Image (cartoon, rainbow, N blue to C red; front, top):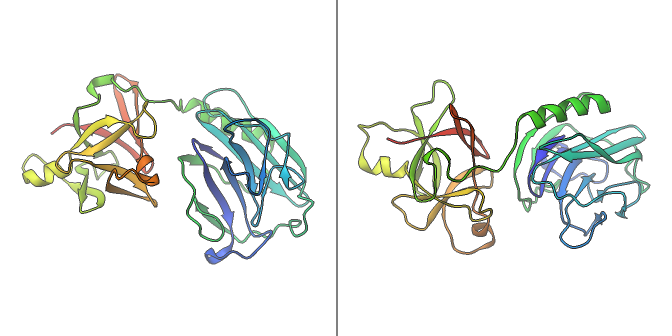
Length: 293
């Protein structure tokens, strides 16, 4: 199960990153692809489905399943679970409330999916053939031993809701568009390190008041309105105008906005003022605190 924001795929999948055919993995799919299957709803739609390899399923039959609703939640908790002869899809608003069961019944009627023969690795954001077309945000997940009860899943959902996922306040605590900020890692023992770029790579480097001017600038970012979501932020390099911090292919990068598909999705980061004592910026790779030199 996982809390997700946009189309993304997480999976328990086949061994050694090779597609071994039907039955070889069971994954969450959350998105708007209708090639393999779809759910109800008109207009722009996003559905929770299970990628069981060589097909997306939201019920016993392939293709359309009217019991699988279109999802409009800003944050979404998705559950795919299975056991011999049976599997289920459940989901809910990641901000409030509980889960709804979208399907709970026999394995797909298409041949080759009962029994499943998953092979024990865990991958985020790619298909069984290593395709990398998934886009979106994955926040947290749980893998269980055996077939979890609805009560167990409801307890996990309560924890997700308690985390208070929310769109950031764009003007709180001086963290507003046009400001220049630096980002310090909060992990114990590494809090002298800041996110800085070297070429197109963004990593963490030790930066202090005595560091060179060039390193300080490499670790400084101008706050801009989020490209993909105006309620969030994008960060422009202080000394490389037109180049932005983005999360792509599982790493942080510095990249120019060249109007390509990937540039249009330059990572919008979520800023939250949790309390007067707790300000944080949520990156796809961790939580950091904003710091001025």
